[in-house]
Image (cartoon, rainbow, N blue to C red; front, side, top):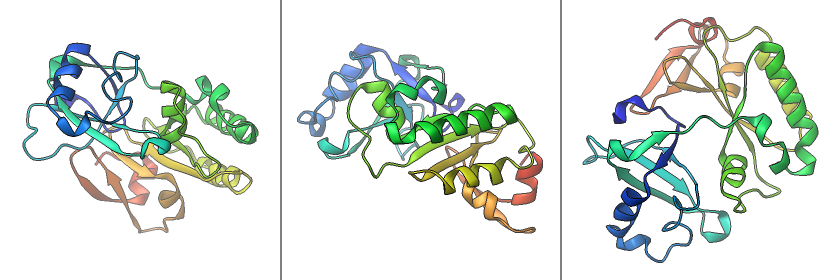
Length: 218
């Protein structure tokens, strides 16, 4: 079912369903990579749904910057997609620019220290999965940090310290057990009593920062 998937989930698509969906969109005919996307073994990512897509799985893919950096969205039958295991930062060291290596090693070590496994998204993810050129000197390192409950004390402060010494900006979210995501920097900067924005695939919610840090359910 479409409702079973969460923000940032990667999905593999049955080739026949992909061909049919692309053929139904005349505006995609001239775009590079799109027609052969699935046959090349590339996944798509879950996106927010639009009116008229009830019962379908809303998916998207970003084209590389040199091809216009366009985001392509399609809606597919639930039986035509399957969940792909999440990508791990530890699997993408070879894709990282040389200038990022020391920072990536520090991030992986931080995660191991706190029992967290960072997952890349954004430019690093797509370059690693597709072999196309997404990274540039101005790219951020976008990371997802799944947490099972309480945010480990000291984790956000350590992540902020790594960013201060990094050659790139560290962007991303903590992924909460209910599938919501909160920007790590916003949560770290929140004062006692502040609220933070939590993004879900179908809604936005304001939650008490203290409750998020404590692992309280929504």
